Length: 206
Image (cartoon, rainbow, N blue to C red; front, side):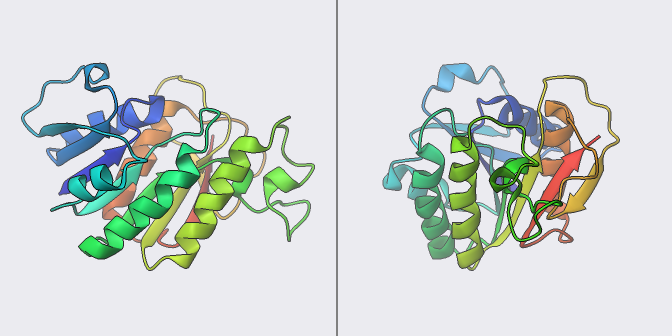
């Protein structure tokens, strides 16, 4: 497949790039700083650009089969500002499938069923700013025509790949406290061939 990976220099994104290349897919990454990509691979196309630039987004969508976004919030509004550009470019190009990395904060709360976790006492996060950014993206994807999946990890240490974890649609697995970066990346990458979680948020934890 031709896979576009956004956020490819981040912790999860860089692992997804590795998994995708290992599986012999053709990978395109859009990055502000190409020097941060330390991989030489004939199946990797590195494009310098910015997810907030509509032309850059439109240009990298040509010929893409699936989009994986591992963009994070990083104290900015990049996430919520780039998603309308991504959705529009995908819809114009006829690309249906997008898998994004969200946060466990936007899963449903088990204690307050009509609330999301970040809106309830269930969340241990002091700041809700990042979750609010992810919530905006969730709302945009819900209103789009795309076949989206939002992978929602809880606490995310670098850690090792364990290869075994629990997943739950729309909720965080009961008592789930953490999931490593490599396992999150692996599960996210596997969704390019799976349709079971289309139009769903997926909680992931050990």
